[in-house]
Amino acid sequence: MKEGVIRSRPSLEYQHAFDLCAQMVSHSGYPTQVFVSSRFHAREMLGRLEANETAIVPVGQWAASAVNEMTQLYANEKLEEAPGVNLATGQAMSILWAEPGYHTNDETMALIVQTLVPNGCLLVISSGWLSRFLPDPLGETRQKRGGLVDQYRIRQMLHRKGFDISSTYGFHGLFSSVWGFAYRLMSSLHRPDLADRCHFQMRAKFISRGWLSWLAPVRVTLATRKTTQPS
Picture 1 (spheres, rainbow, N blue to C red):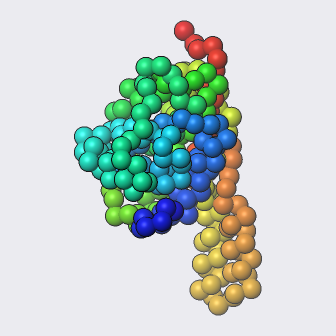
Picture 2 (picture 1 turned 120 degrees about the vertical axis):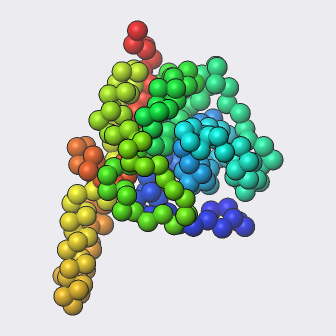
């Protein structure tokens, strides 16, 4: 967190997702673009990335009101203006797409294909059904579940556009949630010995991969753009 910037802490699920994306962007290289549908995602990612090489691209409902907020977000990172990544030349080494929406996914996907270099890294943050139970410490209203693209359609869309999906990570999925319930139950029964074991298992299984990630409230899909695009 930058000095002098006060930022509420998001849920642990989102913290893991944002941190993983920042790590992957750093590994893939800059410049990068971040397609976001809310100030929540923009602020969290901008605080984790190299702001002077990161172009935030508002999409969806937030795009109409994002201009003034974008200026403030970059000002918080000690930048007078947002850095630009030319959408026409395909120079982004990595792209992050937070919460694809049904009404904007085709347009956004076209920009991603146009901008991302061959073999570039695409990271997609998506929310599952259980995300509605996560706290919203920033006091911002996220999109309704009906407006977000589910994991199956995200994978279909990426394959159709010529992306290889390398992995999908889920945070606080099925097994972790079950152990979390057991932890709360043992705590209520005043069994700190068993509660401690359940809590350990909950944290150990907090991150899931493969099909188990589909059941998690927050997911990150890692994909690579193929050198040869489908016709």
